[in-house]
Image (tube, rainbow, N blue to C red):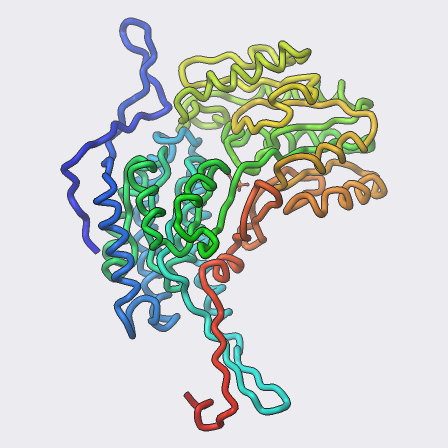
Length: 487
Ligand code: G3H
């Protein structure tokens, strides 16, 4: 309920955008600083959330749905006034290009409006029922307690808010830690949070996870853990909770979504979708196409067209018109990607496109790798960046085997024009991945659609509608007593 001044340690925030110094060296622009809270300060924020949850009748968890909606609407209106500031920080902090930064902001606002509408519809639905023996039942949907919400750096606004907003609107109180990159862009919204919600309902903390989030989990006072990020991060944190079996989790995790180009295919469309599917925001999307299987009869043509298309993608600064390829925010990322390319090349692959895999500071030019095979790291490991591994195949069983044995199961894209081949692959993928895209790239949207994954890719389902259920539980009030039923 208040903006708290932090007088302790600060960390510099650097942009992926570099300046060239007089001595010719590249240096990442310093764009601000962020507080590094200690465990005590983080636990103070948690106590505030616990107290706000326990305030009793009429407080946030027991408010009427329409009252809570009113608070979220007030926040949404205030948030919309900060569009320019947030969009500018998206570009500077994570290097997302202007159209995608604007889209992330607008999409987040739409998500909030859609959540409000979905809750109104859920609330209108009758939850009363009666059996033949006259027992009356009524379902009441109640919050779970204190939610910890953490989002990833690639969608520091949108992905975080797709858990934060439903958690709040269902009556939970929240501790929210912004992503490591994309940390400044929450600042223009702090006053909107403060002025829209009752004190203690939303508590925003900054700092290193090992100092802050670990303490929150160890306290055992977190009831819902909403985390979009890596598998390792999620499981390390879950283990710290003294009662992990009672912790409700909504997790969006690692993925290695395959794009599968079948022997009969509209190659123009397949290439178009694979290029954007693999390279939007430099491949830093959990839903990006991270490995392409192309039938040997199509592979030469596919590579040539992919290469042509790649050559048209403009590299530059996020705010420059028409730019698609931009600097990468994670320190050391270009080195990691280089290692992946070197590993593949040492085992028989080559970089097909001119300049592919070259780096300048935080910039990594996309590498189209071919032929990729199972001994290479890039075959199984998630690159989360602009490497496009292409695997040639002769028999669909080879691809089916990959999908069946992969540790991940978020989505797959099938490109084909023969209904029999498509149907066979749909059957093969149906119990292995959360979503199958036909002649289209993998993606989360529309956000009203369920977003989930199998195996190590997710826990729980998020969508406008599903999230309302994730962050609440149904309590049944039952009676045979006519008088009591009026209560
Ligand atoms: O990083 C994972 C995001 O949910 C991807 O969303 O498919 O809309 O880019 P998107």
